[in-house]
Image (cartoon, rainbow, N blue to C red; front, side, top):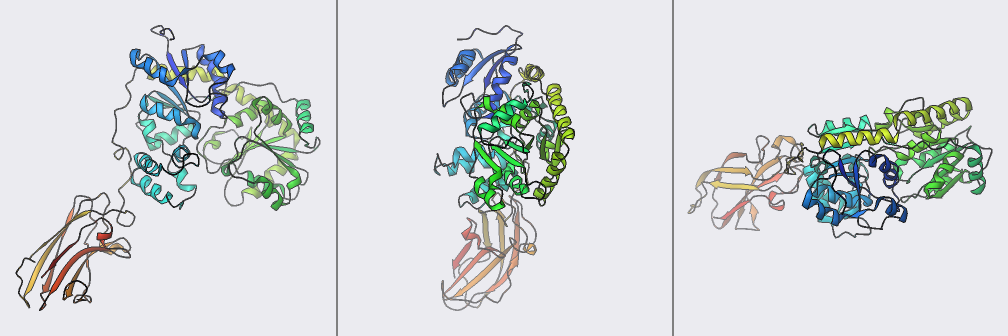
Length: 549
């Protein structure tokens, strides 16, 4: 059991993936921890999963999460510091952060991929679909629930994943939130001004300068040309890293000698196929995952690095900062968090149509001016040294945690109340519950007698019912009178529907009047709201009324 911390010394529980987990956040933790430990009493927590490496065990003696929780229940003196990313390696971090609020370092603004992977991922099967629906509804309200239901049929792509970040409940339960850039802080506060948010540097140790000889040895070892321009793309490869656009750009005139080195595992991408289709297969090399100690050599071997992102999960890219720290300039997407980077260290290419052409033009220009390339590399290294020193990062983290440690965590919130979006409408929602009452249809009702009926329709559901003039999704009252009972001829089939006179919010009601003459013989009267272009409400958990006359 660790000794209690002195009264004025900040005591932190550090919760993050740790090596050997193949996560940039695990590597980053190894850089940050020594500097944090000089400024605070740090206890490292081991998450469920693979045990930490012997090196991590010897240096930090990680405590199992269960033991830390039990100890904290006794003294409650330590502030949890969570490092939160957007993949399954952070499932344990999320669970602990929801159960025991503290300070979250948010490395990715979008956490939807984590939710998907841990509920509907291949390793978990699809038995957790209901959990996915519930979690997305808690974070995103009815829009999240509607989106999750569509996902049952694999009917949406990446756009809703980035549009619904699935972070609200996690962040609202914390004492504070740390991010690594001004853009990320603005995004969070725009969505939820009640959050305590602070931007702190991402600490990256300054490595030795890129050595030409080390880069040359790397090229020879991996069969790369030693005298041709080499581009480098580093990190886990997904479609949002735009590597396909880079391969397409290689086929542009003026870039016939340029080669591309791709380092990192992939998520369903076939770079070999893309390169063959573009006619550049002999100039694209994909090495897959490289151990951390070879990462710097791969950067040193590159003349220019690429760190494109579109769309973006809002992440601060540690791989980009490591590239800049070695002294290599980069080309990035002119979008979101990358807009904060100085133009002296990174050239920005707009995403969208024309991306490959713009990228090809930027590459031709930079590679044709080696002096400019070298100057950008020197500026990049100086930028990391000035703005991303691990000592400064640790100081900023400790200052924020010390300020927030004695603040109570926010009170529990109603998930639906946490989402500031208007309710759905009858055009989009799947349950339209309500009440329907008919006055004036009491029996007995003599054949040939004309009655004036008053009908009350009340919305008791969650969605707004659209008025009849709204077109598709608008509502109207349909009255049918069957001659001879159910299955007979509708005597009112030529009568117009009675449109809902206005939008009806949950809890509101509307009245209708109509006249009906009772036919001779057996008859059945039926009253049901219908949607224009859609179904009767009896098919949507809604009200309907009928009576044999």
